[in-house]
Length: 138
Length: 192
Image (cartoon, rainbow over all chains, first blue to last red; front, side, top):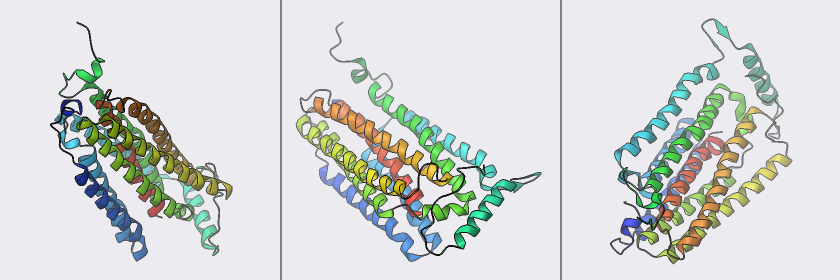
């Protein structure tokens, strides 16, 4: 959709029904993402949580932000910003997600995780509270 | 030559109004900010199975209700844009105020949620999980506050049929705030 200013003189049609329909679909997707974990299947939960988040985000970007109507170069610089996010993730994640590799080992992280797992697995009440040392393992 | 309007609302050398280009540029920089936080959270979460014992304490219903509130406020924001495009500033202002209402509702729910969590010992220093939780949701809440304040300002002009193009600009920003929450919700409340 072009600038509001360019359409402020009566050439524009009322799209209220269209937007309400998009909102209703977003709410249905929200309900699915809430109910997903109830099935108890991790793969389904991942799909209903993140797959649906991507679909919802796409709908907001396309129908509410009207990004499809913007000049191509806007798409390029937004995509570039997203690319930096992925670059950051794939460059740093191997060191954070793994606790050992070729010629290195993060013993502090391994010990911390093992002790936290042992502590919580020993509890059955579900009332455990966060008592870790605030990121000392990294 | 006398300028009737600030240059950002009239100039379009870049194929779009300069004001709108600025909003998209702002969003590109916001993607890097929120993207960094979210990517940092994801890599730590995947490397720390013990975080599941912390994540289990986030309130899914509060998160889901706030998702509903933000999606609905986004609907109001786009309806405000729709009204502005038809030249109806009063209607646009009404929808912008409803959007602000959504922002206030979101912050009220969040404050109850955080009060409960903090009073139960889940503070920002309780663990790295909670540090990420409060940082990500806190930065997001600050964007909600700033967006609501700007929206009140824009609505004040819109109801006098002044600077109606700004209704769309604040709308684009607001949808982005909604967008960030769409990803925070499954990360912090669903994938436990």
